[in-house]
Image 1 (cartoon, rainbow, N blue to C red):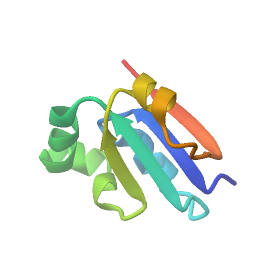
Image 2: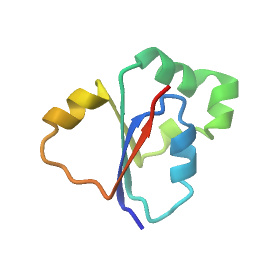
Image 3: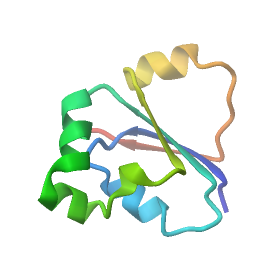
Length: 87
């Protein structure tokens, strides 16, 4: 079971919702370039219901950056699993 997960994209929070079902996942680092989509997913009644408030979960940390640039310049962190959710 992965404990530390990286999610690139997925600003709607739906992949977060699914990953948070697994108690063994201790940390989800979410890298997304679209601040507006993430803000909408946090506050819009339909989206926040669909993602079950995933962005409010303390296991989710959002970093606003381009996913490719984040991978090129990240500080040597290791992840047990990486998921990409791009359009």
